[in-house]
Image (cartoon, rainbow, N blue to C red):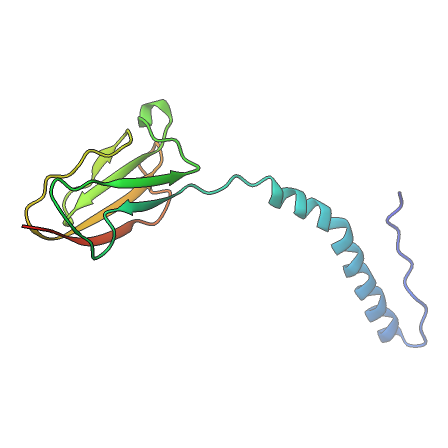
Length: 138
């Protein structure tokens, strides 16, 4: 198959140049479109997660059940090349979590903040952290 393009003949050089340029761009788009579509279809979905519980503004009992739904990531130990979670309560130090489900959290009555981040084997974040604020009943 030949991709040779003949520019249209015109009376002025400017019109001929613009017509040829427009045709060349259209041809480049037609030739490049299948390759772009192929690359877009082969992309690996980005890992993500959702904090299922507790929900923001919820009023819960202690121990607090934590449910996190992870998509397109395998949770496990970094030394095995797997992703994991970093969980922080009330802006404290992040605790790595290597297995699901997450153990219930024993928290005092009052308002609390839970921050969760999905991290790769190198402990670098794979997603933006998610934060929920909830209240533990007395």
